[in-house]
Length: 41
Length: 420
Image 1: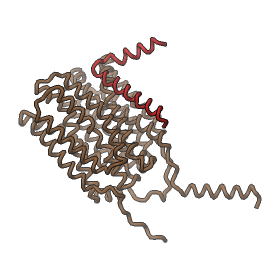
Image 2: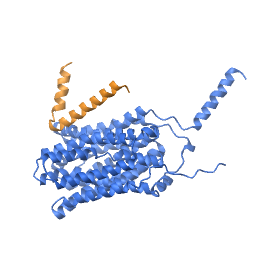
Image 3: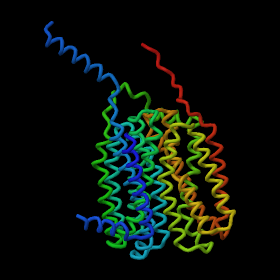
Image 4: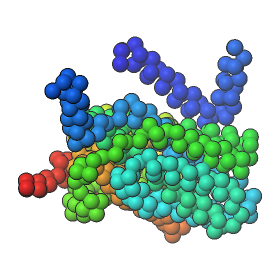
């Protein structure tokens, strides 16, 4: 796997883990994020 | 001979040679992606069952014991059915076991939602889901990984799959909490039942080609007798027993321990979230380390570090920060025993009956889990504190660190049948 792709995969994994971790403390977080993302399109 | 006839003879010879050889393995990416998604779902769905305790017992008018008994039955059923599911997977194909497991999982969740008696609840949430888990979790998936991933990448592949299962556990707690809060506990179980069916299409990515009859070197009984007669297998089982004891005791009793010590519920929530987060990192890291270091040393280090972490945790004054550090360290060591334990079994005994042998080792883990949760409550009631159980967990950790050292990781020598 090229180094840039590998870095991107690790960064994405870190973002996913951080989001789930934050979700434990703010149960509406992911729904809010999804709604905001959907509003962009 | 004409060119066409010569070509036909050559093709027939190549086909005959191919049919005599072992079938080509599945692609590693395919096995890893499908295997990881299967264990993410199967490990994740069950992990948040504790969230149903309050709503179900209140709605049905049951005691907590009814709920706890069903979950205890689930754990034992998972352990008991593991070797059988593994043997069927090794002999007739993991994909068949995964299909039956996924259907039982979905059926068990729906029946759990509809059960109106304690017996019905034990049969569904306990027996059905326990058997379903034995057919959809690590042992069955690791068999496919073992047979299709090259030995030099096996530990990493098992680590990556275990990390996926850990991620499922980490992810599903807030998801299930949200589902219960917004859709009610019964509808949440129906949603999970539908989610369990998502395992079905993934099983086809783990469908191995049939092995030729001569590729089967042993019967399942011979493989089991060989493993139980080997000292290293028994040491691995003893170590895995300790893993089950420690993990389930801490997972179930830590929130009550922190409450007893005057810490708020938010500390327990943060601790469990930290365990989940660091568990993902720990399982993957250990899988990578297993490629470079002797797995018995990794296992001994994990158990020794767990014992050390518990000693420090119960010896220093309890603060939220101390709890978070302990939870992070324990998270790193949480399911990190899974990849090296299974990789050693594959290394010693080969991969033909890896799921069945993994199932036997896991049975020992489940006995430890049962005792961890049961003795935790029993000794707390008898002594009024968790101190005795904490020290028992320390002693068992030291024991496991020692018993993993004599494990010989070299492949077992089997007598070669004399040529006719």
